[in-house]
Image 1 (cartoon, helix red, strand yellow):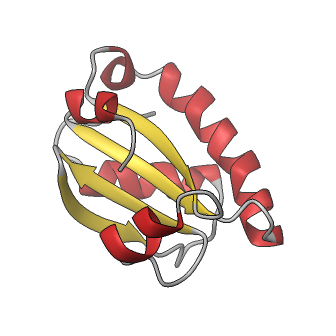
Image 2 (cartoon, rainbow, N blue to C red):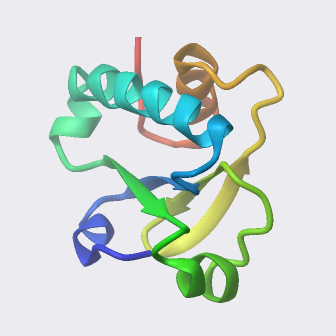
Length: 112
């Protein structure tokens, strides 16, 4: 994932999108709201978690070859530099369900 600074954190949660896609544009607003929610968390401020965003229209090789992104939007959780799990959105693509996913899939993250 571009941005080596993401690897300074215990977790990186990355949105892979195509800026031309309507579902991606909708998800980007959720992503901004998620960022605001996470900034209020101690885990975000103590370098446990960071959000990332990759535009697959400009980073096609990274998305298709390096990360094997086959559908967009794709939201992927990494621990350190290792892929951990994709967020599937079974409970919706909204901030609450994304925060619940993070709570369930990270060891230290405690978001209220």
